[in-house]
Length: 284
Image (cartoon, rainbow, N blue to C red; front, top):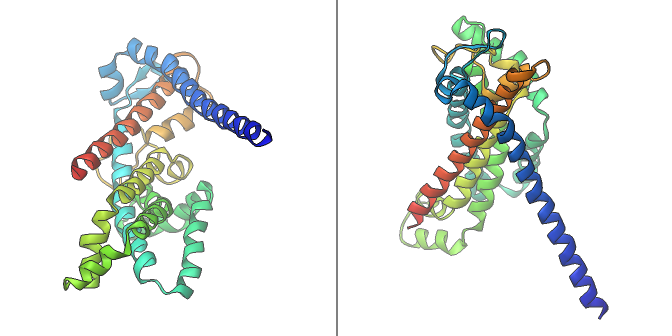
């Protein structure tokens, strides 16, 4: 009887925790959409989303440059982070000696625990001067932000992809070798395709980290609310726009910043849906 009571009690606790989590997400969504959608409607969806001028002191709110800046920075981070992260995951899962693994794995996990502000300082003192010396520019811009974010998403991609690769049955690998394939071909033609769901999940999580990162990007991107001309140009992302102006924003300005968060939320949601559809098509 006591055991039954304990089970019922624990089920109730788990149910309450699950409901609290769901309710928290719903409340956040309601707050954002309740404050952001009216602002978008007041300004006009076309003007708000595709406008190229952001001047709060003149009640001109166009987040087009921030959307483009976010896309450029995120795409650059994925170009930097995904190949390195995937190859590192393959190395840790299939090539790394045990003694070396005991050192490298904690270092990868340590990267995930480094605060964003530390990455930002690293970008200021290492990445920006290097870009400045190489190209003769100020150093702050899309390239610096992409490199820095590419470093920041590595732990997410590496850990998720490695777990997915290790989850593939060893018989797949041994069967490919038995058919005459090389070790590298067995890994990239058999193991990774079998682990594609986990690998894609790591890429999605890394992309979410890149899109949502704020402090490090603020420190290295230049924060200019204009459409960038090239990868060396300064830019401002959606998250940077919110954090830079929310402290003093009031009225319509504040609601427009919340609307910016709504656009960011929808942007991330669309990316997840697209990846899910792509994954299902590949499985079919």
